[in-house]
Image (tube, rainbow, N blue to C red):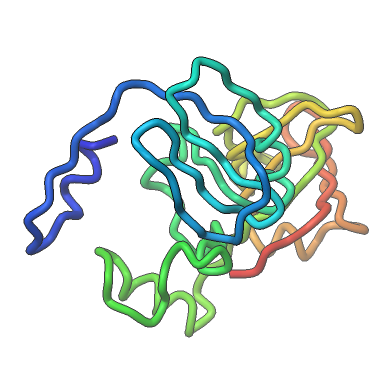
Length: 193
């Protein structure tokens, strides 16, 4: 990751260095986007909880389902460099700025946003069967979206998927049938770009 981020360092005297492996755990509520910590633990505020990046040798995954339900995308390797920020609703999370030229590709993102050119959006969905994270969703050999995260819960398989708007518009009561391998997708929540 440090190597990938180095290409975004512009006109700054900055050095990126990877730290040793750490654990990700759930912490107490902290204001959204608040960052605090020390050399042992970094706290990232998520509103009703926080994520702790710590040297302690224990992980918990309580944060994962909460983030999935709130639409915080974690991209699998198959989706890296394929999805633009509007498709992931990153501006809703204040993760990117649409009106500032602060990152490579911002002009394209702004143009898509202001001219309505983005035709894919992030959705919280329920899946009728397990699918691989990062897999492409197909209907009649046409790509209609991609599953970017999934968690098996007591109520079924919950996932985040980026879906084509035209396919979502044709859904019946938020249900997409007749997908590849008889997969049924029930849309629970949508985050507009």
